[in-house]
Image: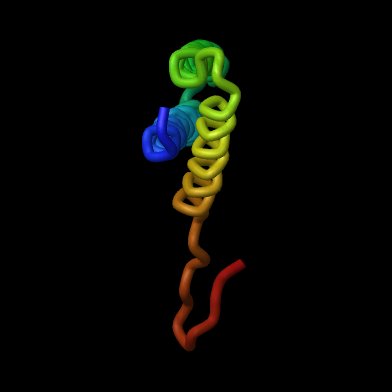
Length: 103
């Protein structure tokens, strides 16, 4: 293998990790919003966790295989997706007249 294919493999693994992270944490955000409005939130959290974990563990297994550098790159992409979802889902303060912000 040459250096270009190694770098390409690691970049692909990082992108796959980012996709898995976006799916996992985006799914968690969606589940929390749905469960908050539900009279039985446990019926949302249990199956959602099982589905999200199954997809992510399976994805890590397929991407990483027996190669720890690809697994590490996948984990890095997963963590970066977590940071991105946290920033995108954060509520913005309500702007009040006069430039003030509500707490």
